[in-house]
Image (cartoon, rainbow, N blue to C red):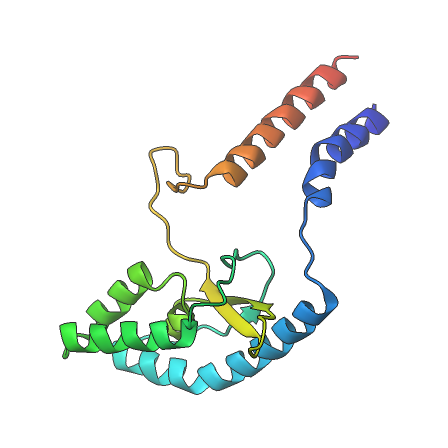
Amino acid sequence: MQLLLVAGILLAYGPTLAMTDFNSDIEQALSNGTRADLVENLKQEREEGAKKLGMTAKVLKPTDSLKVPEIDCGRNYEEEGIKLLDDLGKKYPSDDRKQMEEAEAEGEETFVTCALPTRDQINCKSKLCEGKDPVTLCICGPKKCKMDSDGLCEEKDGSSSLFAFGTMLNLTIFYLISSFF
């Protein structure tokens, strides 16, 4: 009975573990170094920004669970983030909270997410471009999501939550059937 349950669990989670994507050794080394440097550099700025808002900044912890978009060698992510922050500063010159809310909504594909004091995870991806220095993009999370009536995140890419729900349902049914024999 227990062997059947263990076999069912392994069969359910086996494909998930096999699909995990690993970066090359070079990208991984760049990514780890960048994350550590970024966390250290952002720590003081995040604390100062949080004090302005009457909050405390959460500590950033490296994770691989956050999705970092595919890097485009033609984009300058740092410049885009700085431009977004400047635009928000001009749009809401005296309302820091509005700036933070707008940055949360618009800055998902830039390093701006790492300046938000509510974020506590960081993931970076690097890409070696021809004739250029490596391009690195760091994303901080988890991002807030709108909840639907079932309490699940209402997102375009909800396949992972649907997969987890289906897997749990499958395991529950398997357990109930196997407990009768």
